[in-house]
Amino acid sequence: MRALVIGVGQCGNKIVDVMFQRRGIYTRGRDYLEPLLINTAEADLRGAKHVPDKYKLLIGRFVVRGHGVGGDNTLAAKIALNEADIMLNKIREYGASQFDAFMLVGALGGGTGSGVMPILSKMLRETYEAIPVITVGVLPARFEGDLTAINAGKSLMALIENADSMVLVDNEKFVKYGEDLTEAYKRINEMVAREIRLLCEASEANQVGENVVDAGDVLNTLCGMNKVSAMFEQDAGAWLTVKPRESGGYPAELALIGHASEPAAPPSLFGFKKKEPKTGRAYRLLFLAKNAATNSSIDADLSSASQALTLFIGPRSEIDPQGVGAVRTWLTNIVSGETRVGDYPTKGRHVEVIVVFGGLGNVPRVKEILSKAKKVTEEKPHIYEKKEVTIKELIMEGKDIEPLIS
Image (cartoon, rainbow, N blue to C red):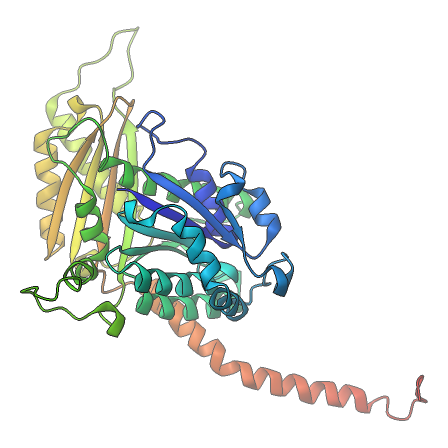
């Protein structure tokens, strides 16, 4: 799948930078993705070492002077609105018609990412009506505080109305107790970067699999009816009646992505490779698919999904047809809607499995974050009222002190 991958804010910049440490995982230097980094903080852009400067864009230069918005996503949204033409002109330089999708990556709890992504998503949908906009949104962990919860709630609601798909990543699920946060976030960023790359590469592979996964399979799994809406609204005589995106359309499809892998060959014994039975290869594929679903980017009720995709990556000899069939049956028993299974033959030494569930209707963490954001927002006025009273009482204590400046 050919995509323009736009990292917005510090988190988005880091994930996209990791994605471009090298051009392709199994494609030997060929690449089908193009990077763009957008930020209000100049230091974050400088920190991206693998993306050339010509693919970096600093916005809000005359408002925050390159120092970031300090977690204020409302300010970030205003900057994005004021500099909309600057961002769109930068995107036009890529020749946007060559892309199958726009992919926006960023943290929903931060300032720049959560504020700019909804504005940019809306502009891209209005400007390039037939190209889906996919957002990869990283949700804050519970310990990250009330401000991140408010930011995430506001950004989630805005993106649901202005994107075609939202792939959700939950920091809460992957940060381990007692782990250094820098290392934890680095590990999460690397995980997300690899999963997105593998998903996009598979549809452009030179080696043709038994079950080919093309860009349409990926987009339909992620975007569902939004993809259909984008296609048919271009044709006034279309036989299928859909609700145009600009009049509200379908809300963004919520999606998750998961990944699992194992070495392709069993350990050797005294230099001789042990021959693995076919049943072992078949079982491995089913085991990895279930493991990928368990270790997915966010916990959700998988039976609430309306579409799903499983992608097998590895040496052709390891992708056993019986295992593929078992996974297809497993998917069909979970998801009532469309299920897709494909393979991506490689010369790697691992067997990897990617699972994608789209059109999710039950994601507990999203409900939790929206509920917390609402609660904190309702309590905010009372907190400021209490603070104002406290300050007045403090000042009254010194009313009889002779003033320093008359």
